[in-house]
Length: 99
Image (cartoon, rainbow, N blue to C red; front, side):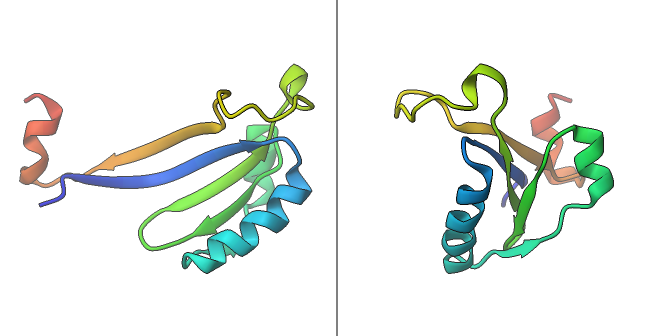
């Protein structure tokens, strides 16, 4: 039995508009639907965001910043910003907490 699941995956992209168009097609193909990220959330995070919701979790993209914003792609350079997991809160997840 699963003890947790993915909450969301965040990707950092070099060209926000081009990546939005690309991921719209890719994520729709695998069963995700684009949703609007509230302006208040984008202001709080101080970045533009696009998000897609799928079966059980979401994926979002945000623009890269600073010196990294205009760098060429290098397959050895990480592109995954983060992956967030959520833990089940019932008794079956007790072993995950170390208690």
